[in-house]
Amino acid sequence: MLTNQSVAERLQAKFGSAIVSTDEQFGMLSLTVQRETIYAIMQFLRDDADLQFNFMTDLCGIHYPDNPKATELGVIYHLHSWSHNFRIRLRTFFPRTDVRVPSMVPLYATANWMERETYDFFGVNFVGHPDLRRILNVDEMDFFPLRKEYPLEEQTRTDKDDAKFGREGNYVVKV
Image 1 (tube, rainbow, N blue to C red):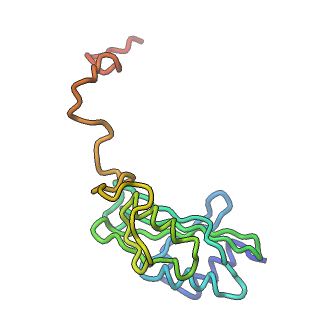
Image 2 (tube, rainbow, N blue to C red):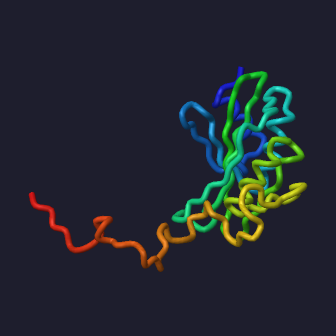
Image 3 (cartoon, rainbow, N blue to C red):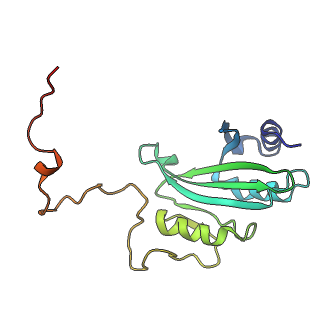
Protein backbone atom coordinates (compact mmCIF):
# COMPACT_ATOMS: atom_id res chain seq x y z
CA MET A 1 0.00 0.00 0.00
CA LEU A 2 1.32 3.45 -0.94
CA THR A 3 1.70 6.20 1.63
CA ASN A 4 2.84 9.78 1.24
CA GLN A 5 6.00 8.97 3.15
CA SER A 6 6.86 5.84 1.14
CA VAL A 7 6.39 7.62 -2.22
CA ALA A 8 8.40 10.66 -1.07
CA GLU A 9 11.23 8.45 0.20
CA ARG A 10 11.25 6.43 -3.03
CA LEU A 11 11.52 9.58 -5.15
CA GLN A 12 14.19 11.09 -2.88
CA ALA A 13 16.25 7.90 -3.15
CA LYS A 14 15.94 7.80 -6.94
CA PHE A 15 16.26 11.51 -7.82
CA GLY A 16 18.01 13.08 -4.80
CA SER A 17 18.54 16.82 -5.14
CA ALA A 18 16.13 17.03 -8.09
CA ILE A 19 13.38 16.94 -5.45
CA VAL A 20 13.47 20.53 -4.20
CA SER A 21 10.85 20.09 -1.46
CA THR A 22 8.06 17.84 -0.26
CA ASP A 23 5.01 18.69 1.77
CA GLU A 24 1.55 17.41 2.44
CA GLN A 25 -1.45 19.59 1.66
CA PHE A 26 -4.91 18.34 2.59
CA GLY A 27 -3.53 14.80 2.83
CA MET A 28 -2.00 14.84 -0.67
CA LEU A 29 1.73 14.50 -1.22
CA SER A 30 3.05 17.57 -3.03
CA LEU A 31 6.56 17.76 -4.44
CA THR A 32 8.43 20.64 -5.99
CA VAL A 33 10.96 19.35 -8.50
CA GLN A 34 13.59 20.83 -10.79
CA ARG A 35 12.38 21.59 -14.28
CA GLU A 36 15.28 19.70 -15.88
CA THR A 37 14.17 16.42 -14.30
CA ILE A 38 10.36 16.74 -14.37
CA TYR A 39 10.03 14.47 -17.41
CA ALA A 40 12.22 11.72 -15.94
CA ILE A 41 10.36 11.87 -12.63
CA MET A 42 6.95 11.65 -14.30
CA GLN A 43 8.12 8.78 -16.49
CA PHE A 44 9.40 6.93 -13.41
CA LEU A 45 6.08 7.49 -11.59
CA ARG A 46 4.19 6.11 -14.58
CA ASP A 47 6.44 3.16 -15.46
CA ASP A 48 7.45 1.88 -12.02
CA ALA A 49 5.62 -1.39 -11.34
CA ASP A 50 5.08 -0.54 -7.66
CA LEU A 51 3.80 3.02 -8.20
CA GLN A 52 1.77 2.93 -11.45
CA PHE A 53 0.76 6.59 -11.71
CA ASN A 54 -0.95 5.91 -15.03
CA PHE A 55 -3.36 8.86 -15.29
CA MET A 56 -2.79 12.61 -15.41
CA THR A 57 -5.81 14.18 -13.73
CA ASP A 58 -4.85 17.81 -14.22
CA LEU A 59 -2.15 20.16 -15.40
CA CYS A 60 -2.23 23.93 -14.94
CA GLY A 61 -0.05 27.00 -14.90
CA ILE A 62 0.60 29.31 -11.98
CA HIS A 63 2.02 32.83 -11.74
CA TYR A 64 3.46 34.28 -8.54
CA PRO A 65 4.61 37.78 -9.59
CA ASP A 66 6.07 38.52 -6.13
CA ASN A 67 8.23 35.38 -6.02
CA PRO A 68 11.93 35.53 -6.80
CA LYS A 69 12.50 35.57 -10.55
CA ALA A 70 13.51 31.89 -10.74
CA THR A 71 10.16 30.79 -9.28
CA GLU A 72 7.78 33.33 -10.78
CA LEU A 73 5.97 30.98 -13.18
CA GLY A 74 5.29 27.29 -12.86
CA VAL A 75 3.33 24.24 -13.89
CA ILE A 76 1.44 21.96 -11.51
CA TYR A 77 0.68 18.32 -12.37
CA HIS A 78 -1.80 16.01 -10.62
CA LEU A 79 -1.29 12.29 -11.15
CA HIS A 80 -3.45 9.36 -10.09
CA SER A 81 -2.54 5.72 -9.58
CA TRP A 82 -5.72 3.81 -10.40
CA SER A 83 -4.43 0.53 -9.00
CA HIS A 84 -3.57 2.10 -5.62
CA ASN A 85 -6.22 4.85 -5.63
CA PHE A 86 -3.46 7.29 -4.73
CA ARG A 87 -2.92 10.87 -5.88
CA ILE A 88 0.18 13.03 -6.05
CA ARG A 89 0.92 16.66 -7.00
CA LEU A 90 4.14 17.79 -8.68
CA ARG A 91 5.20 21.40 -9.19
CA THR A 92 8.04 22.90 -11.16
CA PHE A 93 8.97 26.58 -11.41
CA PHE A 94 10.98 28.73 -13.82
CA PRO A 95 11.67 32.40 -14.60
CA ARG A 96 9.52 34.50 -16.91
CA THR A 97 12.54 34.91 -19.20
CA ASP A 98 12.75 31.15 -19.86
CA VAL A 99 9.17 29.84 -19.96
CA ARG A 100 9.61 26.28 -21.17
CA VAL A 101 9.09 22.76 -19.85
CA PRO A 102 9.06 19.40 -21.61
CA SER A 103 5.73 18.23 -22.98
CA MET A 104 4.14 15.31 -21.14
CA VAL A 105 2.06 14.26 -24.17
CA PRO A 106 4.38 11.29 -24.91
CA LEU A 107 3.69 10.00 -21.37
CA TYR A 108 0.05 11.03 -20.87
CA ALA A 109 -2.29 11.68 -23.80
CA THR A 110 -4.51 13.73 -21.48
CA ALA A 111 -1.76 16.36 -21.31
CA ASN A 112 -2.40 17.45 -24.90
CA TRP A 113 -5.23 19.93 -24.46
CA MET A 114 -4.23 20.84 -20.91
CA GLU A 115 -0.81 21.95 -22.19
CA ARG A 116 -2.45 23.94 -24.97
CA GLU A 117 -4.69 25.68 -22.42
CA THR A 118 -1.70 26.46 -20.17
CA TYR A 119 0.18 27.84 -23.17
CA ASP A 120 -2.86 29.89 -24.15
CA PHE A 121 -3.31 31.53 -20.76
CA PHE A 122 0.22 31.58 -19.27
CA GLY A 123 2.52 31.40 -22.31
CA VAL A 124 4.34 28.26 -21.15
CA ASN A 125 6.20 26.67 -24.06
CA PHE A 126 5.82 22.88 -23.81
CA VAL A 127 8.85 21.65 -25.73
CA GLY A 128 7.97 18.69 -27.93
CA HIS A 129 4.21 19.25 -27.92
CA PRO A 130 2.71 17.96 -31.22
CA ASP A 131 0.43 21.00 -31.83
CA LEU A 132 1.14 23.85 -29.40
CA ARG A 133 -1.20 26.69 -30.34
CA ARG A 134 -3.99 28.67 -28.72
CA ILE A 135 -7.06 26.65 -27.87
CA LEU A 136 -9.53 29.10 -26.26
CA ASN A 137 -8.32 32.61 -27.10
CA VAL A 138 -8.01 34.18 -30.54
CA ASP A 139 -4.75 33.63 -32.39
CA GLU A 140 -4.18 37.40 -32.73
CA MET A 141 -3.95 37.85 -28.94
CA ASP A 142 -0.44 39.06 -28.13
CA PHE A 143 -0.52 38.55 -24.35
CA PHE A 144 -1.30 35.80 -21.88
CA PRO A 145 -4.37 36.76 -19.81
CA LEU A 146 -3.69 34.80 -16.61
CA ARG A 147 -0.28 36.33 -16.05
CA LYS A 148 -0.52 39.12 -13.54
CA GLU A 149 1.30 41.65 -15.71
CA TYR A 150 -1.24 44.41 -16.21
CA PRO A 151 -3.36 46.71 -14.01
CA LEU A 152 -6.68 45.34 -12.81
CA GLU A 153 -8.54 48.40 -14.09
CA GLU A 154 -8.24 50.30 -17.34
CA GLN A 155 -6.23 53.41 -16.50
CA THR A 156 -7.60 55.55 -19.34
CA ARG A 157 -11.34 55.20 -18.69
CA THR A 158 -13.27 58.46 -18.82
CA ASP A 159 -16.75 57.00 -18.33
CA LYS A 160 -16.24 55.99 -14.70
CA ASP A 161 -17.09 58.36 -11.88
CA ASP A 162 -15.00 57.37 -8.85
CA ALA A 163 -17.47 59.09 -6.52
CA LYS A 164 -20.02 56.39 -7.35
CA PHE A 165 -17.57 53.72 -6.25
CA GLY A 166 -16.65 55.33 -2.93
CA ARG A 167 -13.21 56.38 -4.11
CA GLU A 168 -13.46 60.13 -3.85
CA GLY A 169 -12.36 62.42 -1.05
CA ASN A 170 -10.66 61.80 2.24
CA TYR A 171 -12.58 59.55 4.55
CA VAL A 172 -12.20 59.80 8.29
CA VAL A 173 -13.37 56.96 10.46
CA LYS A 174 -14.85 58.20 13.72
CA VAL A 175 -14.46 55.99 16.74
